[in-house]
Length: 61
Image (cartoon, rainbow, N blue to C red; front, side, top):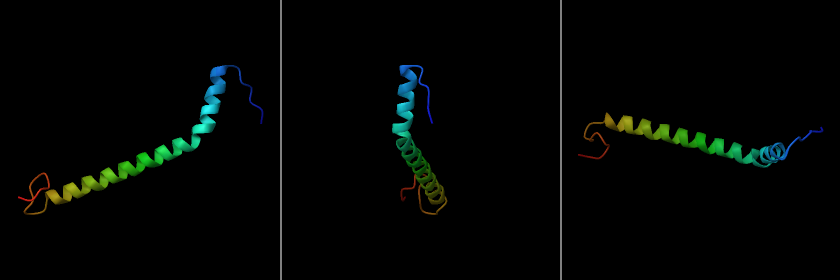
C-alpha cells in the first residue's frame, strides 16, 4: 500500500495515528473500567441509603 503524503502535517498525523493507536485503545479500556467502577460505587451507595440504621451519607448513626 502506497500513501501519498502531501504535507508535513499529514505526515505527522499519519505517524501519530500509527504510534498512538495502542495507547488510545488502552485509554478507552481504562475509561470504561472507571465508568464501571463508578456505577458499582453508585449502586452500593443507593443500596446503603435504604438500609436501616445508616445515615444518608452512608455513615452509621
